[in-house]
Length: 610
Image 1 (cartoon, one colour):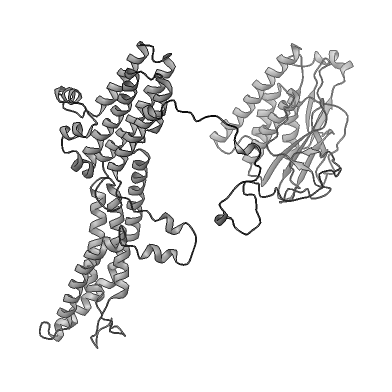
Image 2 (image 1 turned 180 degrees about the vertical axis):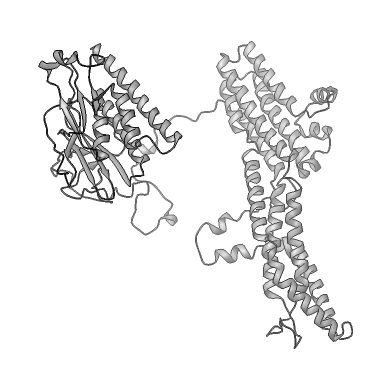
């Protein structure tokens, strides 16, 4: 029977440890005292053998001392703590699962009582038979996995005499000739009986029938889990390793833990302790640990801490029959409860503590008063802003009043914003392939129709900023234009190189669509000076005749003209070193560009359909 000590530790006290330590039944002392006495007897026999000059010569004693020194230095190579910890963890997990599946019948009995209605004799017999079949299934399982239950029910006839089974039912079990267990038969009888009750209208519909069948299945599943744990134990090699390690450890300790008294011995002890106190403590800890694990391996046995299965069987049959028969349809006379007029909770006079009542079920900050209930609190709106690089580590911006930062909030971008974000990804990939120290793109929504896009690239000696401006140069000429009304303002450079070359010049004059902007960004980031030519709308028809395909943009290098934005971008990437150092990196650059191209094409088609 399981030893209960919960009452001893119901209140913290300095005496709780002694109340538990000085228990005998189920204690560690009861588990290890026999092995400890045997070990001490052998230990003292070895001591006599070592110290007796009649048995060992002085040279023999020196050899014994060297052997003891050798064992004592290497005995800790046996990882007892590691082995025992894992073994006990596995065994304790199995023990917990067995407790959870012992099988309590109250839920099934209440379901049967609530669904099978009627007080006629046949109804009462049917309900009692249903719960008795479940208890019979539990008895059949327990008698095969618990020694105590097997002693109580050594054969099927003893089960009949105990009332769990009828003679006819015993004959049905014995007549079934199969090479397997028959634990399922009572559950099968219960399901068949429930179906007959449905056929005879004792069950109002199929819903209560399914509730009964579900409870029967759950009860049977718990019993099958117990069988599984009994049929498939922990692999025998694991307990063998544990037992072997522990017992070898203390067998070697019979020699290695001897007190060495030789004057010339290297490992001579300074104190001649006859009783090996520290080794005995170690023995109690490790061997007691093993004994606990051994007890948990099969908790259905006969030890003090093993489950009392017979008590559970008696409890289940008594409780189930009381639920479905003795207390069936019992409801006390309904009266208005005292809590209607009795507002204060009542306690026995001796149990009332002389302390002020403190409510337990409250939040930890519920008692914090920051403002009176009738006080008017001024509420202000707080602007929500995305995090930026100047934000302090505690979430407060470097300058200005604190603002609310929402990291997980994402505003739905417009098609224009999506296009520009794709170009940011493209340029970020190409810049990173040149091993720049840092590249970061920051996009901030200014209004519902327009977007300001900033690009910052940090290099060892240069810093560029891109905003609403344009730039020109004389070596490389780039011209571009989008006809019609759908002209999108795209990012451009705001700051040119910190040190402008004397032979170059820059100017600002026009707006440009985002698809061509990557060429300008690569030219400027690489430090290549170029001229940015903008074609006004009124001159477009005349200029169209000089273009290869009849549209812009165009890239002119030393008189050679290149059309198509993505062709220009790939060409400049190769010329300026943005196409990657390896073939694999180049393929990734092309893949990002193609992804944006497909995305951009879809956006144009959507805009044309508006």
